[in-house]
Image (tube, rainbow, N blue to C red; front, side, top):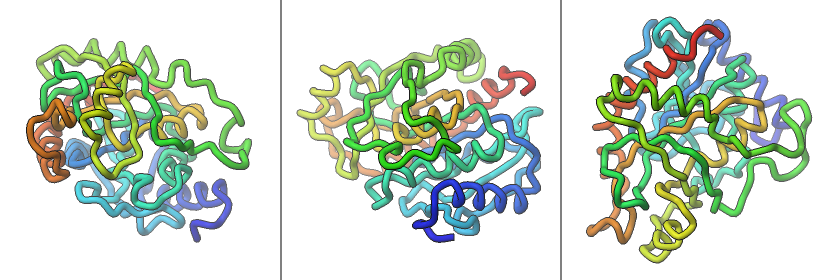
Length: 281
């Protein structure tokens, strides 16, 4: 099915294909894995994988560290769906396509979404390798996945974003973090930028003035889409590097993916503990 087909039809065609190819029971939780974090999928039991390219209408990833596959399996005793890789606006996709995978997992019955990313630390108090819970975001991409005609079958015209990042899920994550990763889980506001250029030191100073502690090029469109679809959202960010001006050297994507891969084990343990704490659907 082509990208130009109506969004509702594309979403449900991709969801039907995913359910058939993965032989999938109704999943309770979905996890979006950001740059270099695909190794988290290794923790699934009885895992089944399908490439995005085999699902009709599903946008394909083009960025290193985003393998582009949907993985289903058991995390603890819970059926989970992992989106291994995401698409971004800077790849040429409109915001509605950035959120396409979120709509597919919602169509498959998911009601809780854990979205992860690798970020730069605007706040110098955050160390490389630290996992931080996202408490809120600032969308600085100048775009929204909800722009244009609204299909009420997908969600309402206007969406409340007061608790975009669910307080109860954040509380659960903070409660299980000390045992799962050996340290408390701190919180920060995430600034979503259009990319693909990294921020200038002046922009990072502006973000700090706005109250952001983290910065990256993803997540905000997915979270807006998830809230439009009625999903609860938890955001977890792995600090991959100090942001420009905080960092003394140049920023490189390969360093981001390397740092993310190094922290993937800890992130996987934290996600597993959170999912175990969700209880029955």
